[in-house]
Length: 618
Ligand code: GP9
Ligand code: MN
Image (tube, rainbow, N blue to C red; front, side):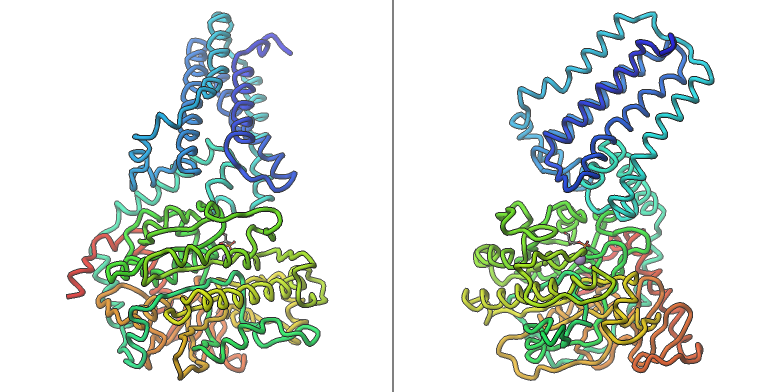
């Protein structure tokens, strides 16, 4: 090693700091590591960041180098330590929006002493070593040559590059979608996560500050004219005082309903249930990058998810007027049941914004190897373990159960499979059917549990598919299953997911052919509950009214009406799939884009903060 680099403290500092960070990730924070690639990324990322930051020293004048190393060492360690304290309390990492909005740090205040452990002193050991070395090598600072500067920079950037490429392989679109703070920390490290968080936070703040209250007037005008269409009184208030139970069925698409594999029904329970429910056969999911969380957003707020990010991740601090909040004012208790990490999709933060009273997340369940499939707790055990909680919460309640077993890549151990796999070149599609069947059985089991517990009679149960399970990538195999070639028209039709509204003891169930979308569930549920909620800002319409807004829009500007289907600049007959003159679709194309834009503006500008909902309800 050349004299220039020899015994340079910044190298030692970056290695020690990297090692310390790795030890924390690996043994102190409970980050779940599922495969070797994750293990490798977790090892690389602490060093990638620490080498990059400490090596900036080569660009500095010798007299500033010691100060820089000292400052980075101390600030970096404190940042790690604050996160550790926060994690011990909240099992999550610090987020700016949470710090600002919910004053979580304040919550931490009283208990902070109990979070400090004696062993934490070791966290500062490397700081002492580096301070000592800096003192000892006082005159060791050098002016680096241009060549050396470039070499050091090239090396540190390449390590970071390798880190980011591996992270992108492990979790495609990690930065766009956010997913989970744990994922970000695992893949790109705590420091890069903070930079990302600060970026997202400042971007949303700037957009909010720039927003103008007057934009709201235009949107309310639009909503009043185009969306608020006369209500049909037929089912109004039928759910009044009853419990509302949503089941968000992971990745269940409508094309499996009433179909068989080798003569075996794929979803026998749902097939029976649809006969005894309001079944919407043309119900479309409208989700985007935020997948399940987008479906939740649509259902709770009747706004569209965002075009380039997961709104749960980027805009949890906004003002919303979501169903849990509205019905909370009517005496309803609201809760979500989902046996996954509470911070996935930023749910722990967003649910507070939406007005949920409680979130039963993974921590409330007994999850072990025995009862886990794929992503976590299997759906059957999930429902079984949930019943005691459901019985214990105040009534009437509004609850949502989010299933998990039927999640990509649909790997179900043979012993749980009740039907055969499909036989095609797509493993994903082949495996999908037995996994869907598993969820179908789990939902059936849940119904039995509800009946046993006496909750069934006094509840309304709504089952919907959250989003597609089989992507376009599997079109060839899908074509084999459906016995036709998949065109862009079929692709849109494949975005149909089940929607069943099951009202125990109610006659008059029927199959409804009219188009429907996730955006319509909020006004529908409020209608069933008999809550007028006049003056609400939403883009969906009550599914039981005779006259409804004529289209269901998708995030990319495609849409369907009862007669038409528009996608890729082509207009089709929605029923037959025949191509039609574009002029048929034109009356809607601009309005769809306008509506999406209004919804985005509402979210980017946080415009609902200017809206007085109380005034409009008088
Ligand atoms: C994870 C579950 C699945 O908590 O909601 O998320 P998805 O990948 O379907 O959005
Ligand atoms: Mn999902």
